Image 1 (cartoon, rainbow, N blue to C red):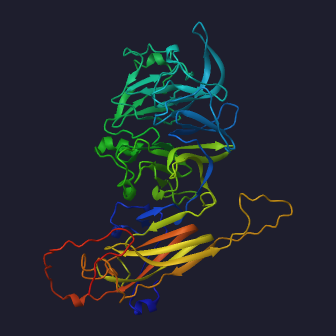
Image 2 (cartoon, one colour):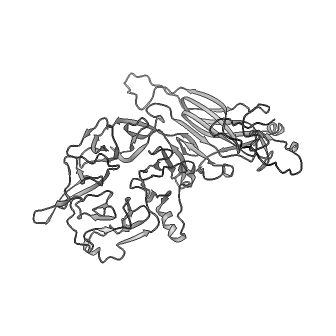
Amino acid sequence: MIPQKLIQGGLGVASSAFWVQGMDSSMDPAFLQNGEYRSAMNVTNRGGILRTRPGYNCLYELPAGRLQGFTLFRPTGGAWHQVAAVAGKVYVSAYPFASYTQLPNIQFHVGSDIVVFERATKSVKQNLDGSLTLIDPYDVLVMQDGRTPAAFWDGTVARHLDPLKNEVPLGMWMKWSGDRLWVSRGPEIFVSDIADPLLFTETGYLSEGGSFRVPGEVTGMAEIVSTEVPQLLVFTANTTTIFQSNIRDRETWKTTPNFQRVLFPEIGCASGRAIAAQYGQLWWMTMTGVTSLNAAAQSRVSSELLFRDNEMAFSKGNLSPNIDKVAAIAFENYTLFSVPSGDRKNRHTWVMDQSPVEKLNAGSPAAWVGIWTGTRPVQWAVAAVNGVQRIFHASVDYDGKNRVWEAFIPTRQDNGQPITCFVETKSHADFHELAQGLDMKTFRFAELEFAEVQGTVDVKVYWAGLRGNYKELSTFRFVAPEGNITYTKQIALDSELFGYRPQARLVRTSEVIEDRAEGNTCGIESAFPDRHDRAFSLLIVWSGRAALRSYRIFARTFDESGVGASGTAPEDETTALPVRTGLIDNVGSCA
């Protein structure tokens, strides 16, 4: 309830909290609902509170050169390894991922943009007479760059393969599905022997000469995971073809109806790395936006592709024309898409939370959280390492160096340094009973409620109307001592331990003084200074560990009687007056 003294003093209040509907930058900010915000950077949105995102921790720096790929692989009976390709060479780092060595005998082309990794399982051995012998299954990591013969590593042996000996053919995108390795080369698809990803001797199954063909160059592959009939999707830039890879008897492929068919004739995929599977749902980046398997299937009925990334318009509108290296991953409830926004590298990582509010018997719809920055991921990888689900990525960082990072570090710091975050709110037009909708208001000040404050947190608040740029309103510094209990601290029997709980802050900004002279859009876009407008929003920036729980904007009614009670046609404009962009005041002025 609004305090009576505020109403009597001519002040109205607009507020927002519990942002479970997430971010939406595709709508006009004045039309967003409570529970939504316009944009955000480096935050999470769990429980409707916007808090500093989990941190990144650099594990090691890779050699210089073109970073071509990254994955996780666990040789049978061995430890987990991180595997990275740089300038044609392949490097491996065994758990606990503190250093790396180069794999011998493997050299891809130094100029290849991408090295593709695919894990497969070998469980048969071909004898000299062509018969097969069952062996103890073991995993192999197959590698391709599209220009050099394929290679593999099983934890012991590392070498290139010879297609002249019916080994893996030269290709690019691969997928292990139906106990066979599927390999693409241009528009062709080759399929390995059953249970042997390294041999391709069963080529008499097609009259076309040993390969399938799809309507264009393959850009990626993905398996539709199902307990009954797992199937394989093969993407081009503009089409999606489905194969019934669950059928193990190769002799029946010719006679199986729709063994291969075009599933989506106008929907393709930008990159084989831009695919993420989460909770049985497949998400991927098409040439024009993010979609899901359900949305793509619906497009066959409605002839309209339902993009799932319109809310990310403020980042999507600045994408590089070349999006063939978008990198996607699913981790816990999150789906991440690292995209080249404002950069040729993947500068922004779009973050979708599948359930910002999750309870035992109910959840909430998926929502876009915002963007994460700080690194430029080339490829993500996730695995349960020693029973703990962990997520890593290789990045070409802003200094040009290649590094491997672990994400979702609970300290909410990047390498021990504070993370800069921001939230841009909706534009509030309704100030309870004082001023509604299209009524003019005068911005006065704002009130912010922070929680989970740890360490030193610096905050800067800006305000804006529907016109003009954001203008600085107030700055704050919070200092909340943490104690000495951290996950990196070594504790001895005689260690003195102490810790303090995170703190909260309720602060008000300074006022925008009514008679203050301002350079703004007055005289250009309106007859009034920017502080007089129909709606107002905040840009809240902070550096450090904190969470924004709620905010309130205070405004008062604005008397428009001085502009006359009747309509007046404006005079023709004869001079082009500029309005600068950025967080600065503009050049207009009013008497």
